[in-house]
Image 1 (cartoon, rainbow, N blue to C red):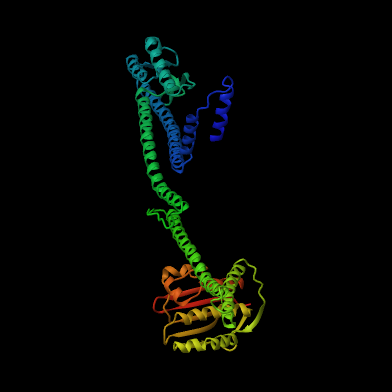
Image 2: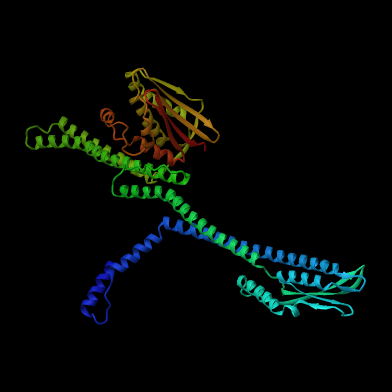
Length: 499
């Protein structure tokens, strides 16, 4: 947008007659509005409200359809019932002696029926009586029919209705005495009370729909806030982490499992990055320290010999050579770790007896163990077959044994075990040493990681022995793990495929 704005400005400067002014504020507003509409919060609210509105509208349509059917059936039933009552009432007006009907009674029945929108016409068989209320009250009949039509069209604008007549037999002692013709606006009609009830129900439904829609929006906002607040907090934490503020933690406590797991993952990542950052600083310091000492020794001795302060004797040259070998050994360790972790290791696997390997390793560490009165216990069956690269696995065991003796106090114990569990072989080295704090266990096999910097400086080493061990084990398709308790000891377990 900035580039486009720049181009547009240049274009306007060169020819203002053909280029409209570029309104950057309007574009910015549109972009901000677009971003707002694409936020998770707005999408959830819009979706929740849309679904609620759809449900309310669907229920309203279903309700109206049901109400219309109910009132339609009710109107037909009422009409049928009224006609049946009129037939009974007209039959009661029959005069057996004369074979005629009481005219006064017919007028009362006709007027009552007219109030319900029904026009009555009574005729005897011989037509001696031919009474029709439409002839006596033609204007009122017209008004009643027009009113019924207006009622139906006010509710159903496309209602197809018209004046309808039905004829029924009048009987006395199972003999037909005349005919009753009833007319009405049909096929059915609703009176004022029924129409008012339907309209009241509709208004109530609309009011309830508005209330429920408002409640849905409020619930949508609350639910959205509950969902997005932790996510927003995670976003802020992620931005701080991206800016280099490692170790920043999200303090939100969400109620949903997925959000809680997201926050826990980001917090764990933040702590891991903080550890990594510290580790990078330690690596720089460690490598600098490891390289600086032999280089300083070389520099001082070479300068002394160049300035002829010291004679270049065999002993002094041997000392320089030893420092060079020390530098080479450090570089080779780094190269070895890089080779192992880069999957460049070519294993020469074979089947060998692990007990024989351990006997040679225990023999090599026997002097160091005696110096600290440490007991070396060999719990190996005979035979103890292992399939793998002999030299690589020997290096692993040497690294683990060296650490076990190094961090085990006087009169402690170091045990080597061999077990077969299903299709796996477990090789264990257990010690009764200082132990490792729980917070350091997840990072123990990382390169250059030191549990205690002061202790590492005291005991020496660059902190890559366990990294090399892990790389060799994983190259064999195995795993390495550790269980440790402070002041109790540690147990390192190597799990390898049996074949």
